[in-house]
Amino acid sequence: MSQASAGGVPSLEVREAILGRRSIRRFLDRPLREEDTLALLEAGRWAPSGLNNQPWRVILVEDRSKAAEIAECTRYSSIVEKAPLLIAVFLDHSSSYDRDKDVMSVGAFIQNILLAAHDRGLGAVWLGEILREKDRVRELLEAPPEFELMAVVAVGHPAEEPARRERKALDDLIYRRY
Ligand SMILES: Cc1cc2nc3c(=O)[nH]c(=O)nc-3n(C[C@H](O)[C@H](O)[C@H](O)COP(=O)(O)O)c2cc1C
Image (tube, rainbow, N blue to C red; front, top):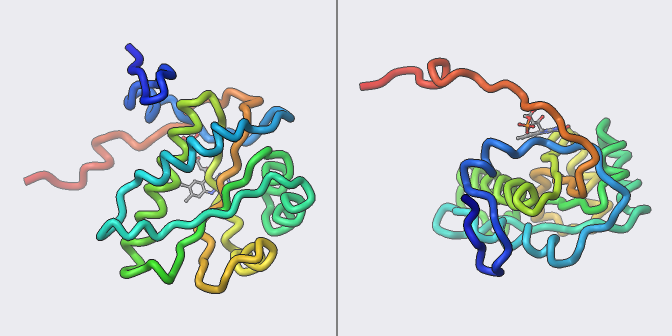
């Protein structure tokens, strides 16, 4: 059964959200509503972080010509060009205290965004390959030098229903038990 979220909008159960989320790489040509964009960031905002330092910062890209510039930095250019919203996620080194922990915190932030997108019937994909050009992306987005790009999340209304990708079996995951 669905739970009601704070805004009264029916929300997916956590289990369904986790199991049903897929990476979406094709989007309808339809802009995101501002309330959806803010809801994704709100979900990210509540991610855990070491010492609660919240080391994440984002730059949002909806402008098509800016998206086309970013697209030149990755071999996943068709996704970047066509996504109605790009969320460039940065680690802000001015809020950082331990690189490993901060990078993990940013990962939790991104996962919350992916789950919130799925919950709202949107699609999203976490793009990491673009990090090969992370300095170029930072410059294109006019981010300060203390911002290190961690990922670009492409978001939109899904234009595909991809099959579930396989996962390793639990037996392969548990190395040892005491
Ligand atoms: C750190 C990270 C980097 C990723 N980079 C890319 C990427 O550059 N391009 C892409 O199409 N998908 C990328 N993905 C998405 C994965 O391919 C996807 O999560 C995985 O194949 C499992 O599929 P699912 O998300 O549909 O379950 C990335 C995911 C993660 C967590």
